[in-house]
Image (tube, rainbow, N blue to C red; front, side, top):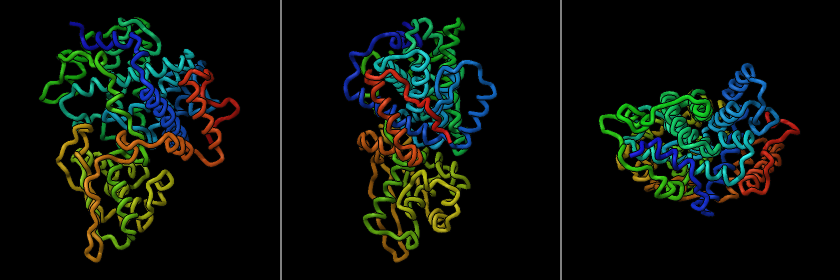
Amino acid sequence: MPTLSQQIADFLTGDIGHRISAPVQALVETAFIDTAGCILSGRDEPVTRHVLAWLDRRASKNSEASVLFSAHRLDAVAAGSLNALSGHALDFDDVALAGHPSVVLVPALLAEEELSNLAGSALIQSYVKGYQVWADLLQRLPDPLHEKGWHPTAVLGTLGVTAAICAARGVSPYIAAHALGIAASQAAGLVANFGTMTKPMHAYWAVEKGMNSVDLAQLGITASMDALDGPTGLLTALSSSRPPERERPFSGLESLRIETVRPSIKKYPVCYAAHRAIDGVLNLRADHQLDATAVKRVHVHVSPTNRKVLKYARPQTPLEAKFSMQFACASALVYGEVSLHRLSAASLSDPQVIRAMDVVEVHDDERACPLEPTFAFADRVVIELADGTRVDSGDIRFARGHAALPLEPAQVEAKVLQCVPPEQRDTAAEIVMRLRRMLRGSDRSPPHFDRGSLCH
């Protein structure tokens, strides 16, 4: 029986155009547009600036692809990697498969499009194939990666990018199998670095290592055919005492996972583990006209894994605030919003926010969610007021923007426009329009602006 790498390689080199339905086309289109907004939102983050300066110092003469939708250009691998970093810098990018698939797949494919002038249909197929590989590998692992300290975006995202680029380039099954094996030796990223500049570097490295793995395989570098499913392969390395699923055939031949496990668009620019609770606080605040100063205690019930991920009870920086349930609830309670504007040093020093963070208590809910293993079946928020009143959100099954409660296309485009200053919103709207036309095959011009940089 062919190894898993060989089975995946056959899938990557086949045509699945007939399996791309109109709903799948629309999902991928939304993923590209939402990721574009996230790339724009992170342009001015310190980590983006630092890495851009580092790349400029070591840049080759190749100017293959644009960065940050601007006139600035780098080689395709560097451009795709930096755009992924910018897209993940504010943790506003979409969520699925226990991680952030689009923030690595989309930048890699946009860079490859500029390098190879890919058709829109090729971009769609390549995204779906990368997504499928990530989903299949995730299903084979016995325990959530987060619980062992692995960040799936960095680990499985590296394989997803490798798969997507193999598909985009139309490499042979032989090359694709070796590229996957090369990528397997480079897949890494730690949850311990959440709340620091290293966290968005996970997206950078997933793109860099994925694209480089394909380049190396095309140059003749070899890898083991059982680097994924062998007794000493990646799946075993990522598993605990329980063995991974090695025997099942690759799932891409049966169904496309994106049809049943769709990306969820983030409504709030913080870790997705806090989104259900944010909705709960906002709903209770609006329904009961709550005054933050009258709140005695906020009880939030989430899964043990998500409680550990949201590890900063008293965040000191906006980066830490993105991984703080206390800040998420406090911002929702005090300001009635959790937005890019509120993720600031000013908010963290606001006496009302400090007081509100101090009254938030996070409790474990052991009910497992069959759709999102790191989540509880439902989250819950209970707020106690100084006068003894208790208000209860009840079970919150999904957050707004989840695939089960999707944002409308107009809401996604509105999110993109909020990711740039008011004076640049016409330009951002044009990026959205160009992306739509490119993916639908009616415009082959890249969605960036030679007339001037969007960086400022």
